[in-house]
Image (cartoon, rainbow, N blue to C red; front, top):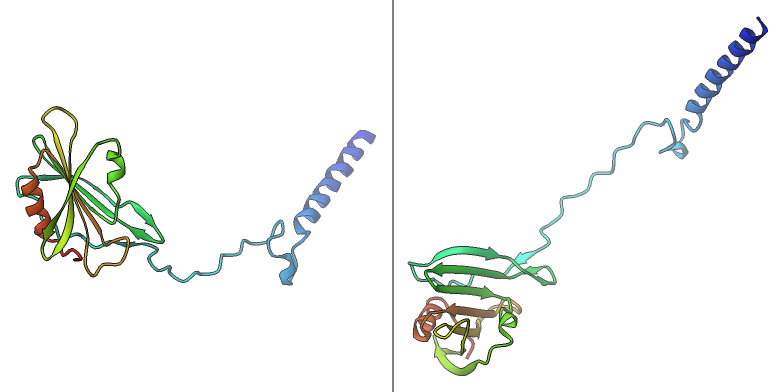
Length: 179
């Protein structure tokens, strides 16, 4: 009989302690915010954030109609600016149009021959190199687009197995280089 009384007293004490523990920290003032047993508070409403990134405008370069877009990238140029790289294919020919992006770093091991050419009233640099095989040719046309802020003013066309004159004509479709 004594054991039953002791067990009953212990049980009632644990219930009382449990209820008291649930009540601890809950008060009518703001000092108890976030305490055990208090209702959750909703976070303050935040104003809508403006866009963090701006994207360089397209280069207005028109690829040949037979070429198909196979890849598009928006690489981060830093300072909240995204560049553009579009890649087009047709058979063994490939064309990359880059705005604001230095795509030449991937070809640093090639020996280029360069020359300046007139392009829509300004100047462009044409670089050529043998590329991936005996008959493959890599042609790169670079210029700084008039009226565009840096880094978006940097324009590059990379043609693999595209004739130099054809790549210059493609560049002419939308280029407005600085003189």
